[in-house]
Length: 221
Image 1 (cartoon, rainbow, N blue to C red):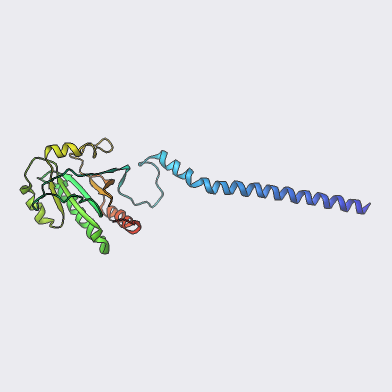
Image 2 (image 1 turned 45 degrees about the vertical axis):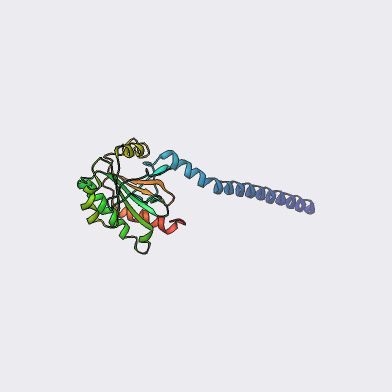
């Protein structure tokens, strides 16, 4: 009798262990699936939240991503304040801080140009990987840009004709804001894509940090 009780208890124990093993295996599969799916779920939530939605605490990005990035091909024969025309393929091979304004360059314009210079200087050993470009989107002659060129001698400068401005205007219509008067600083990657912009009044410290991270992890430019 005792022997029968022992066999029954042993059989019940084995069944219980198998059941627990089954549940553990099933739970492991569920957890494994969640591990694989969680990055996609997080990305989906962030995509739905949009650029102005949820961001992880501590995010310091000041720039607004242009999605998808827009290939930028500058019009040919843009007159340069330094003489001649803007070099063909100027945007290739380096990260470019680009500002589009007017040749009279008021207070907002000069603030942006100053920030662009400081952001570049702050990159230290990577400074040669960054260049600056100021495009004047009006009909004034390149000579009127002379004082800006004197103040920022290492910055490339060009004056767009009305036709050239019209050619670029659709490309820089981003988030329903016109190119003229936007007072934005654009970031162009070494492949010539407009990939980010900074709103008027953006904190230059955030611009410095954004560019620093891009230069750190970029394999191009």
